[in-house]
Length: 265
Image (cartoon, rainbow, N blue to C red; front, side, top):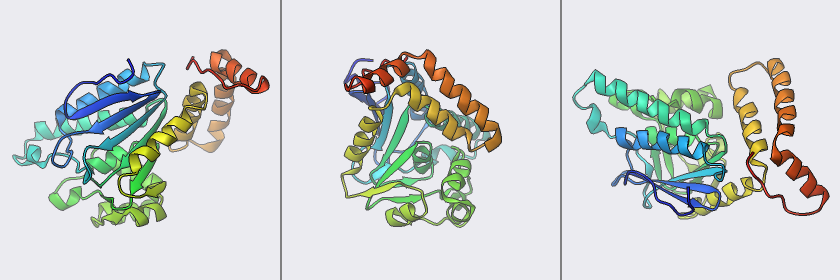
């Protein structure tokens, strides 16, 4: 992909900022998700995974009020089970792809992140929230449930108790509470989330992308694996880096007191 190149549907905008892919949810008025935008997100992440020049992803919402309000509920008004199954598959596919992106992903939460909007942020590695942001998984309030991995990602981040408060009791949390419970990593002022997210993504770009990918796989594996089983996997990932150009470049750049030139290979 060329730097600054636009991509795909108008509901999901994309541009490259150096080695960072900036993705903007753009479906006014509330930046809701539908089949088109979810499929586009999965397709885009697949492309970015194949792009050696892309090290990180930042995702945010268009405008000042909404990161994303989640699914367009008009899609579920008729109670069509075929539509429900397709949307569930699209949510799962898109957010699983995002969570498995090989580089660093950062959500810049610039307003309301509700339902599938919060699930999108949960699928990212790091979440930056603006001070006015509000977050919730209120699906049960309208007779639904989170189907974009929210029931799995949320308790891992905030613990079972807060996950139950938010999912079972429909509790909405502001930025301060979100940081206290570990839902977001940092709070910034209004209008500042995107720049902070881009700065973090750029900082990740100073790391070896090969090492970042290996480290992320190990960190994510801790969610489902046994710690004793992870030791040989960690060892093999470490040794595996010695077959990459980035390993040789990183060590030699340090010894030669120069900035490394990563190849992501």
